[in-house]
Length: 298
Length: 242
Image (cartoon, rainbow over all chains, first blue to last red; front, side, top):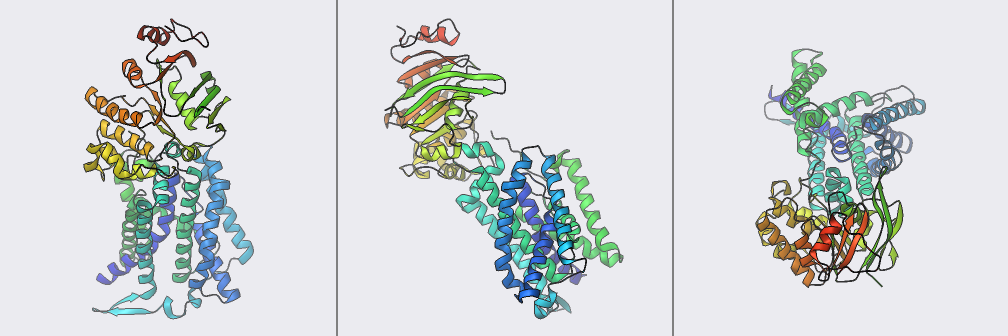
């Protein structure tokens, strides 16, 4: 049992990574990005393409892909999401849904339906492990993923609380009009937030490709896991995202011990229970569901 | 040249014309009080100067530079800071974080977190408290401090006494007197006529989006201001009521 718990906690690091960007975009820009999973798969394909075509190892390829993802985030916000957000809350959701379809089919057209993986390009890291007392084997890649999640979330927390730009992003998320009146360029703050979110998506995509296989339509399940982890942890809290990821992964890992189909069912069951509890204790609506603070000032 | 000039400013909220061709100017170091009944257009005028509302017509000039199409966040960097009605603090952030936000696009100058805390000593022990947990007076002090952190040329104060007890209002105005004495240029929207007249050099009374009366605060009688306030007195251009 302790082995399953440790594996579940480490898998939670991956879910925290993929949920982090979704949660960040929603808490800052109030946009539910349904293209989140597809963008992660896009990053995975970009790394695979660099590795297979130019023999650039995935960890080195991140130096190219992460800035690219940041640029995509900036452009998405400036040219697509910002404009669609003017049309109300539903339009950005529909826009990102459409974007997900475009990305999925673009990847299908470019790379075909074959499943790919970055595992062949990272040597033994995909299967290497450390043996802990009690015959517990801990995968090195899983530890790296978990450590990356903790460092990323801690770094984001420091960035948001200790830097001028971070404070500007938080102010914009709380009250964009007043943020403008104190000198914050809300458009820039949102574009930076979108860039940061896309960098986290890029990282999640890299680990998706390293730990598993992916194909052009692998984005939807990743979006689902990210959404479940964000809702379980509460989208307003970065560390809550880590907790949400761990809870989801533990439920899946323990569910798999009960029944071969229990991996997904366990995760969904915990998600639905949390959803039900949230709805019954914090009132109806997405804001209460995601435990977001009110936007209204005093 | 006047520090700030407003020329024939027209601001609409949809079909409603909230400000109807208002013109005035303010000199460096002057304190101007904007008074008027609810709905007279004072707050809309102040927010248009700060860039929160785009005017339908007219111009806002700072030191001769046309700000009319400049977005609000850039106006802060040019020297205009607004203390909005209702404080509008970022309630999930601490006092210190709110103050530091005021410096985001501000100009270099003397104001710092410590100087604001010296001006409002009751904020010092609350420095790391979230502003949503502060009293009304502490919130107002934070809002004024946040605006001062940008080292403004012109400080716009919108209803700083609103919702505060008389004792707290006295404290806030005592702090404002210090700012006025230091030569800060201030445009003050205030419902309390006595306070507005006592701290300002000049007063403008607005009625239905227009200037109904304008003159030096010491020269205008309270009776005339009251008449203008309720529309019983109409401004004759260039004249100062006796």
